[in-house]
Length: 188
Image: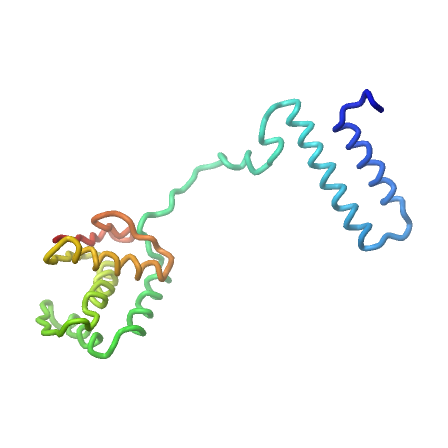
């Protein structure tokens, strides 16, 4: 017994206990749990033995062998599913105030909108969301021209936050929409 490798002693002990439990005529729930545990331990030891012969890590962990199988498809950058676009539209209309919805309707009717507005009424927030939806629907580029790059990036941040509501992380400057190639350009 002393001349046997430690792993072989463990295997023999596991095997003896497993045989003892299997031969038991009346088994309790604890017995079945122990049988399951011992079976998994024997399987694990078989993997260790295989690894000691080959040195291949895939013998220890079968998931390692699958890691490099097949072609990997890179996730599409800045891509919105149809469901995500529909969800964004729903959020857009649910969270807009009536005066913002008037801006939206005016945008449908007129190419150019002259809006006289006061401060702090959510125009940057509204138009950033509208621009993302318009880019997704039409594929037209959207340009944000502000007095400074910092102000233009406020639009960018609102757009990124809006996209995150449907689990899309927008990256890049300009942001290029993966669905149709529309660019969101921020100038200041």
